[in-house]
Length: 440
Image (cartoon, rainbow, N blue to C red; front, side):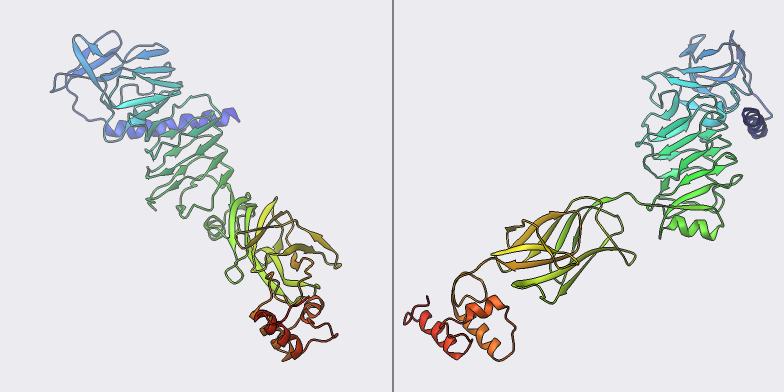
């Protein structure tokens, strides 16, 4: 495997060399020579380093040569060098290459593993041997022979220039942490990466190739936030795309005939509300979960309301991934909330009545019934703790078969205790309200 990588690296260096040679002008201004560099004096009186002539492993770009400040490094300064391992860039260097060609200055240094920048430099910076612009939002170059198997592009980076990662044979896993504003063509070129998460960027250009000739690339993780993948982004490789169900990444993999694996999304913290009943659930659950609430006929004795509360994912019933909180609005403040099992047995959920809602926690969604606690106040059929006009009205509705009563409500409606619910009970309640009778 290493031999294959080495040959590919040499091929990549050769191709870059061809590009560089084509870019070298025919006419070259007169140069001066020091022990380590050939240089030219620019019109502003500063030096451009034209060529490195030394053989050191560590190269320090000087701040000045022969009394002239060093301000620029030519694109072919280190062309096809095979001895340099580390380069130190002084504070005076303002230009490396030209026209965004920073990577081409270093791309043919086969042993380069680290670039360090003087902290006082106004244009460039370095972190852990990687070259950035001074603002750290643009990654300019990841050294060809940097010996890290995993690299996390810092979250403050929003731009990758073309060939910012090129022909590195050690890098196996590349991770992106931020949304990019710009990614140059072939930003990742000929690298030995095997695994990567596809970066999100907001200005896609369908002409670019993002991962070019990354022949070992076999795993690409595509988040649900990704809404754009270029047709040629995986030129020279055929990775398996790890995608989520019902996502752009899945559609792209299918339409471009790429192998794919559908991943399960990690559970998330969610709040879901049923608009019809106002029932709310909160907690950790499947990212694609939806709340479904159905009112059930009160087959449970003394229940004022019963609800079948479920979570569904793509139509299938699922359960929470842990403990969740359920809130059930109710006008009745004297109920217990019970989980009604399939066999009819009931489990008290020990709910609290808070701000007009019964609140409790559970790790299992099912049928829940609000059941009135023991009530002994004759005539109080609506359970509000007093005997009033609403109770008389409800009894009249029951007599007219407009309202159903539970056995407990029938017992409370029989205020004159004659064994039946009738007009005499309504009359007694009305007299009680007028202070003309006492209900005992």
